[in-house]
Length: 422
Length: 184
Ligand code: HEM
Ligand code: FES
Image (cartoon, rainbow over all chains, first blue to last red; front, side, top):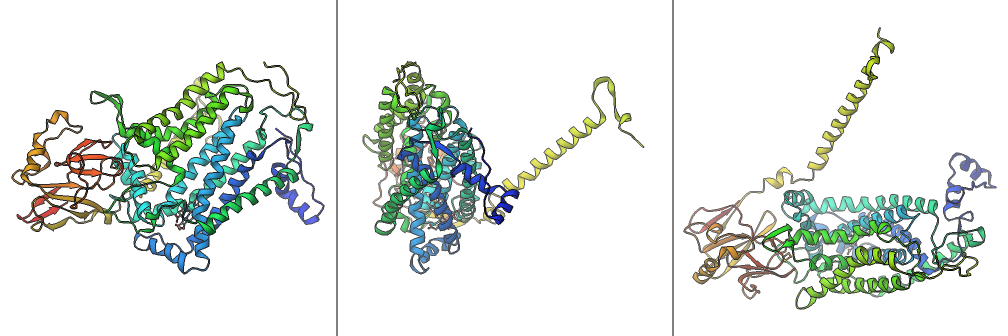
C-alpha cells in the first residue's frame, strides 16, 4: 500500500478544516498529486472513472425525473409522457436517464472485461474485484426496476417474467413471488415498491463504490504488464496525469452519449414500451434491455433438467435455468481461485489470449441470441454458447493456469527488459 | 448490598454476570429478529388486495368452440366452451405420457365437461398464452401456445411441450346457474 500523505493547505480556512476533517488529504491520496500510479496505464483504464461519472449522471437526472414522475399504475405512463411533452427539458432529462443506463452498462462491461483480460481479479485485488461484482449485481437490480417505472408493455411483462423466476424455487417459490408483488400479479403495490427501491439502490451503489475505491487504494492500481511496481520510477502522480487522461476519455465518451441522446434516443429501447401496460395481452415477443440479453439467453438455453428427464430429476428444467442465469454472474466471484496463473496480464499468456477472445465473441453471440425468438436452431446455438461461457470459467481457466507456458515478464514497468521465464 | 466479589462462583470460572450478559444478548437478538418480521410481512398482499371479491360471469354468449378472457385478481382467466372433439382429444392421451400427470376429469366439473376454466398464466414465467381469441396460434396440441419461450398446452390446458413445468392452473369456481359462473 502506498503511504498516506497528509495535505497541508496554505489557505488558513482550509487548514483549519483539514485539521478537523482531513478531507483534502483523502482526495489527495486517492486521485491527487500524492497518489503514485503506474506510469503505463492504457485507455482500457479509463472506464472505471467513466462508470463513476455515469452513476453521478443517473443520480442527478433520476432525482429530477422523480420530481415529475408518479408511481401509480393509472398515471405512471402518462406522467412519463408528460415529462416528455410538457415539462421544460423533460425530454432531455428522460433521454439522458434512459440512455444513461445503457452507457453506464457499456462503461462497466468494458471495465469488467478489462479486468478479465489483465487479471485484475488476482492477488492482491480479490476483494476489490468482488466488490465490483456486487456493484454490477446492484446495477442490474436498479436498471431492472427502473425499466418497470414507465409502465409500458415491456415494463409490465419484463417485470412479470423476471419476478416469476423466483417461482422456480422449490416449496417457497410461490410465496416469494407474492411477497415481491404484494399481490397476485405485478400491480400497483409492485410499481410502488420498485420506485422506492429504484430511488434507494443507486445510493447503495455509491456506498459500495467507496469501498471499491478504498480497496483500490490498499492494493494500488494494476497495470497492463501485470507486474508489481518496483520503484518510484515506475509511477507517476495521478493528478495531473490521469485526471487529464480520464477527462479526455470522458470527452470522447460523452460525445457518443450525446449523439444517442440527440439523434437516436430510442435506438436502444423497445418500441413496445410506448404502449401502456396491459395485463391481459402479452407482447408478441418479450425482449429485455440489451445489457441483460446474455443472461436471458443463458436462462432460455437450459430447457432440460439435471438428472434423467422424467425418471429422476434432481433439479427441474425451470429451476436449473434460473440457477444457471444467476451462476453466470456469481461465477465471477470465484475467479481469483479458478485462475491460479501467477501471470496477471493476458499479454504474456499466448493461449489464454485466444480463449479470452472467444469469450468476448461468445458474449456478443449470447447478446444476439437473447433477442431472437427461440425457434429453429436458436436454442441449439444458445446451448453451445452457454456451454462455452461456463467452460471458460470452470474448465479452461483452471486447466490453462496449470498447463500454459507463459512468456517472459519484463524486469519492471520503467525498464521493460525481458527476464527469463520462470 | 451486593458487590462484584460475591457474584463470583470461582469453581468453574462462570459468573452470574456472564449469565446475565448471555441472557441479555439472547433477548436482544430475539427482539431484533422479531421486529424484522413486520418489515418483511408488509411486502405481502395487503388486506384490501386479499379482499378482492370473486367475480360472476355470464357464459351464455360463449359459443361452442370459442373462449373468452376475463380478469380476476389482476390476472387473466380463460373460459373455454369445448367441442366434443376437443374433449375426446383431451381424454385420448395416456396420462403416464404427460409432463404434469392429470386426467381431463380432474380439471373440469362433472357434468360440465364442455367448460374448461383455467388461469391464463403460463406456468413457466407468467406470460399469457395465445389461443383464446379466434385466429390466434393454438400450438401443436390445439389448446394454447405461449409465445414467450414456446410452451404448448392441450385442450385440457395441460402442458405438453416446452419449458413450462405444470398444467395451466384451475382456479376455484362454481356454476351458480347454467349460464352464470362464479370465480373465486
Ligand atoms: C444506478 C443508477 C440508475 C440506473 C441504472 C437507472 C436506470 C433506469 C432505467 C433503465 C429507467 C427506465 C428508463 C425508460 O425507459 O424510461 C429508469 C427510469 C427512472 N428512474 Fe432511474 N436509474 C438509476 C438511478 C436513478 C435514481 C437515483 C433515481 C431517483 C432518485 C431514478 C429515478 C427514475 C425515475 C423517476 C424513472 C421513471 C421515469 C422514466 O422512465 O424515464 N433513477 N431508470
Ligand atoms: S412464460 Fe410461457 S413459455 Fe416461458
